[in-house]
Length: 152
Image (cartoon, rainbow, N blue to C red):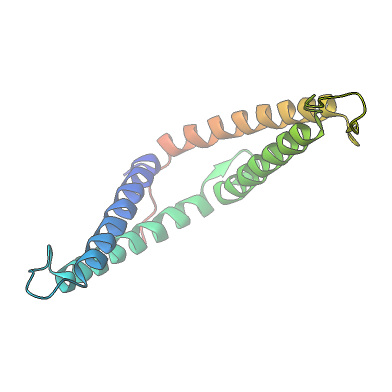
């Protein structure tokens, strides 16, 4: 199985596990005289089975990510770097937005708000980070479609 297929299967299992839990919670308590919509105990048993499948799959994905290389980095390191880039990009954009005067003064007597940091420079930095993020994401996606899932 390819890593990309395993990642899609992980997402499906995660969704299924969450739906089973939601159904069990909704069926855990009913009004007197009303039958439950589902068997909460059976749903919890199924939830446990799906969780076990998910655990096994996540172990195989993590083993694959540790063994797979993207340039000089392991896939695990590349994924951590991608998360850092996403966080940095979001931080730069948030501060740039906060430093941009809104122009919502009604009268000249009202206080002017002045930026303490240059928004244009922050946007330029954000664009550079976004480019690096796109390139890394493409490299990760390429490897996801070529790497074979490790055995546990």
